[in-house]
Length: 79
Figure 1 (spheres, rainbow, N blue to C red):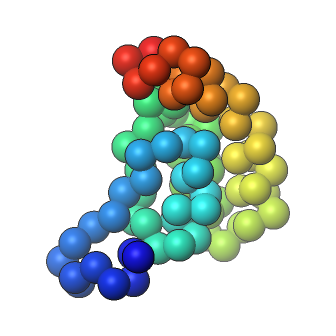
Figure 2: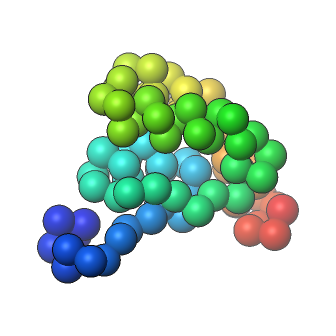
């Protein structure tokens, strides 16, 4: 879907649980509740993903997943 958007339209991920996959699919960034708790980790995940470091990005995404699920799923967006 991302590749079918107009050139002046920016796609952002809204879930830290899928940030790496979204960036690989063409999203340009993310708006993540998790970044309020772990800004450095979220920034590192972004840099690894856009830098093509898939193995490291996947490993970091997997480590962040339990926390991301708590923030978004269990406690809701407001945390």
